[in-house]
Length: 338
Image (cartoon, rainbow, N blue to C red):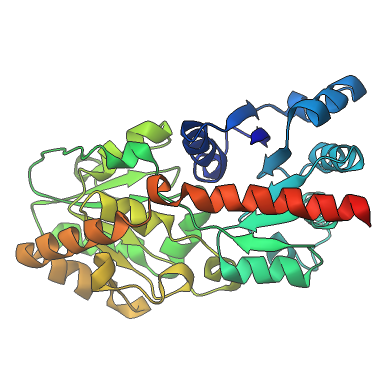
C-alpha cells in the first residue's frame, strides 16, 4: 500500500499511534509519506490531485483542528480513503462546556466522525463511543510496543527506584489519590528509596531523593524505564480514564519492571500474569511498601511481565494496522459506488 499520513510530531501519542506503526509498515514494504506540521494540512488542489494519484489511503492521527477536518473533506471528495485516529473521549469530557476551546474540539471530533471512512482508536469502549456518535466504522487497535522497547537496555543503580511516566493530565490522578503524600511517607520510611518522574508533573519531594525528567525523545524512554525497580500507573475511576490505553504498563513490563496500577479502565483485568498488581485507592502505601520489601516478588513479576509484553509488539501485530487500512480502502470503494 501507499499510505500518506498527517501526524503532529509534538504530541506524545503520535509515536504510538502514527510514527512507530507506520515505520513498522515500511519494514513490510509499504510506502509511507508522513507530514508533521500544521502547514501540511492545507495542500493546494493540485497537491490533493497528486495524493489521489499516488496514494491508496490517507491516515490522519490526533489532529482535530478545523484545517484537519477540511483536509479530510477535500480528500474524501477526491475519492481518497480517509482513516482518522484519536484516543480521547472529547465528546464526554467536554459535553455541556461552552468555552471556545471545548466547542472547537467537539466540532473537530464530530467533523471527523462524519467524514472518515474508518476511525481507529485505542480501546473497544472508545470505538463503541465513536460508533454511537455517528462514525461509519470504528475499530480498536491497541497501542503496541515498538522496536526501541526491545533493546533490553539495563540501567544499573543503587537503592530502590520508584518510577512513573505520564503526561500533565495525570497530575489530577495523583492529587485525587493522595499519592504525593504517600510517596513522601515512603521516602521517610525507606532510606534507600528514590523516585524518578518522567513527564511534566510537579511534586513536593526532597530534591536529593527525586529525579525529574520533563520530556524525552521517544527512543530514550525505554532506557529511563529500565532504571526503575517499581513502576506506578495510578488512575482515578472516571469516564476519561476508563477509555485510556494500557501502553504504560506494557512499557513497564517489557523492561522487566513490576508495576502497580489502579483497577480502572485498561488495567482492570490485569494482574500478576501481566507483571504487576492492582491497587485500591486507599492501599497505595501498603502495596508499594510490600513490593519494596520483597525483592523475590519483584523479580518474579518482572519476568512474567516481559513474557506477556513480548506478545504485544508491533513486530508481531503490525498486521492489525495493515488490516485497518485495507478495510478503509474497501469502505471508501463502497462509498464511491453508492
